[in-house]
Length: 517
Image 1 (tube, one colour):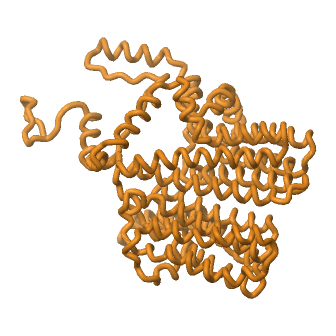
Image 2 (image 1 turned 120 degrees about the vertical axis):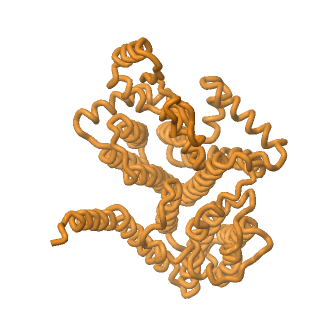
C-alpha cells in the first residue's frame, strides 16, 4: 500500500510493523495491555548507532538472573511480598534444576496443606506448631509453581485450571482440619464454623471473579464507563488509581491487605492456630473475612452502578447461573430482576437454618423444607430473564449462597453429621469453581455439566430425602454422585477429548498427505 515515493496509495497505515499491528488489533476491539520490560531491554532503533547501543545493553543483562527475578509478580500482597517472594526464587531455581514442573510443585503443595490439616485435627501444641510450619511452606510452594511456570515458560490451560482448583481445595482441607480439631477439643460447633468459613470464602470468590469480568468488559467498552454521569463512581475510581500508583505507601499496603487475600489468610491461620488453637483460628478467619466482604462488596457495588456494564449478558448466563432443567421450565419473572429474585430465594433457607439451630433436634421442621424449596425456586423465575442490570454480576454469587444455605439447613434439620454437610458443600464448591475457572478462560461448559441437575434440582433431591427421613443417605449419595461427575468431567475435558482431537488431527493431516492415486 505504499508508492515508490513512500506515500500511501490507498490510505493504508504506514510506519513500523509493531505500530501497524497494534493499530489493527485496536481496530478489531482487542483488549491490549502495556507490560513493563523491567529488568530486560527493549528499545526502538532507527540507525546503526542506536542498534549498536541496544545490542550492548542487551549483552550486559544476565538474562537467567533477570528471568528468575521476573518470575516473581511485580505487585503482590504484603505477606507474599515480604515473607515469601524474598526467598521463593531460590526454591524456583532449585526446582528447575532438578526437573520439577509446575504441576509437580502444585501436587507437593497440596500434600503439605493436607498434612497441615491432619495435624490441626490431631491437636496438641507440637502438632499445631508443626502444622502451621507446613501450611506456610505449602503456601510458599503455591507461589513457586507460578514462578516456575513463568521462569521455564511452561504454561498450559491445564496448569492454570489445576492451580485455581488446588488453591481452593487446599484451603478448604485446612478448614476441615480446623473444624475437626475444634470439635475434638470440646467445642460443639467446630464443624459449623468450618462450614461457615468455606461458604463465606466461596461466595466471596464468586463476587471476585465476576467483578473481574465486569472490569475487563468495561475496559473493552470505554464509552459505557461513566454513563451514569460520574459522581461517586468517578471519585472512587480516581482514589483507587491514586492509591495503586503509590506503591509501597501505607495506604497502598492497607488497601491490598484489608481485602484479606490468600497470603494473609494462610498467615493468619498459621499464626493463630500455633498460638491459640483451631477455634480461635476459625473465629479469626470468619471475622476478617466478613469485614473484607463487606468492604469490597460496598465499594464494588458503587463502582458497578457507575460502570453500568451488563456483563452477565455477554456470557452463557444459564451455564454460570448453574440452572438445571427445572429452572428452564419455570415461568419468566419480569419483575423484580434476577438479582432480587436470587436474594429473596435465599431468605427462606436462612430462616429455616436459624430455626433449626435454635430448636435443636426437632423432626417437625423437615415438613417446612418444601416451603423453603418453593421459596428457593423463586430464583428460577430469573433464569430466562435479561441479566442486564448494573448489579446482575452478583447473581451467581447470590445463587451459590442460596444453594449452600439450603443444603446446610437440610443437613441440620435432618440431623446429618456436620462432617458430611461439610463434605457435601465442599463437592458443590469444586463444581462451582470449575465453572469460574472456565469463565476466566472463556471456555465452554464441562462435558458432563448437563448431568449435575442444577442448583434447583439438587435442592429438590435433598428435600425429598429429608421428608422421607433419609437426609444423611440422600446427601451422601448425591454428594458422591456429583463428585464422580466432576472427576469424569475433568478426565473428559483434559485427557480423553484432547487425545481424540489430537488423533483426529493426525488422521486429517495423513489423509491430506496421500496422493489421489
